[in-house]
Amino acid sequence: MSLRRALHFVFKVGDRAKTATFYRDVLGMKVLRHEEFEEGCKATCNGPYDGKWSKTMVGFGPEDEHFVAELTYNYGVGEYQLGNDFLGLTLQSSQAVSNAKRLGWPLTQVEEALYLTQAPGGYPFYIVDKEQPPHDPVQKVSLGVSDLQRSTHYWATLLGMKVIGKCEEKNTVLLGFSDSQCKLELRDVGGKVDHGTAFGRIAFACPREQLPDIEALMKKESQKILTPLVSLDTPGKATVEVVILADPDGHEICFVGDEAFRQLSAVDPKGNELLDKAMAEDKSDEWFAKHNKQKAAA
Image 1 (cartoon, rainbow, N blue to C red):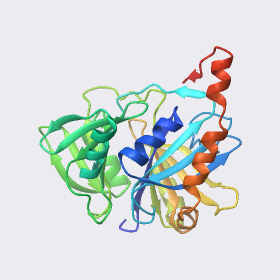
Image 2: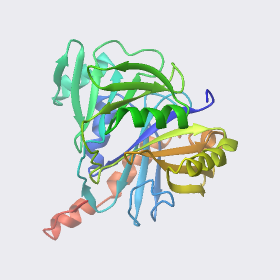
Image 3: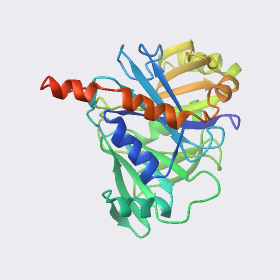
């Protein structure tokens, strides 16, 4: 299991320009690669949508060594409904706190040296006001669960994550594939988990040879498999193989073959330029305004 690693969390975004400002100018992340697709993903990476969409990977460094955000933008969809499934991403960067204050981006201090802010769309981000570390500043992703014991069994026993800590007062369990990676925090929300339409997906890499074993184990344990082992093509880049699962609360989990993913996820020096070009060419906001209409709300 030590060969498995946390990769990214997928966010659906309705306003690409404001979202780019948040990740680039407030958090200080870099655009690592940007890809445009003419039709929906076979593994529903962009959600249950068939049309044109884009994927932008942003992070503090290369995907080989950093947990990053995958921003999926469906042309024509302007907003998504939040649930209580995604409870926050925590990162350490006093520079991000300074950036937010300088740009007038709303910040709320929740405890000493810890601030809460929101990405466009309402996604919560917690920023630890300490110097950004030399390694990955992203510390953990927090997800809501309805039964902490059941979820811990799923993520630890079935998926092989290590239990790193528990907090009975906060009803949380912290897990990870290794101490040096971004952690997963599960928090009992005391009721049903609502995914809204903004539901995301957390992705992990594993050796390609483990993918059929993961799928077989989930079948044996009568757990949900959303997408059995499938190959995904990205124009001009490596083809990767994935298995998409859902945990007991319906959180989507992607396991991707590590070898091909390392090729696919190589930093594209033109990523920033490609994102800016795509945003400049996206006239959908103007079209909807001209026709006195609003983009669809998912």
